[in-house]
Length: 153
Image (tube, rainbow, N blue to C red; front, side):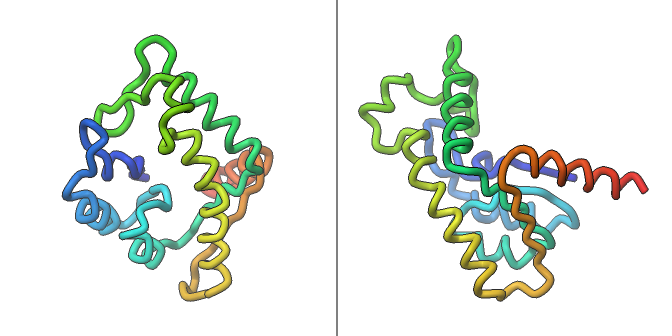
């Protein structure tokens, strides 16, 4: 199943926003099967309309933040690993100076994502959309085992 990290559509070199990102996302969604993160406010409505299944990783905030911090630390080991657009996260000290630091964004984004998914569920505007809510790694592992077991039949 084709998967593209959403930020690779969105971010260009030097943390710039790619001019064609929306068209690129929509072109990707034209495929028969795909997986993508549920991001991009400007395309989210069209993305949601194409979904069969929305897998909601509704991890506790503590787990979510631990993972964000650990990923950020791993990326900064040595010279840092490149992410979308060939970008590298800034030095760790920027946590204290940059209001848009990834850890701060993740803290703010966590409750916003919950609210967005709840709204999709509550409004019930997408007939046939299956929302799979997974709350913690144990549930993720169980769900994946079941999905792969069913696929093997």
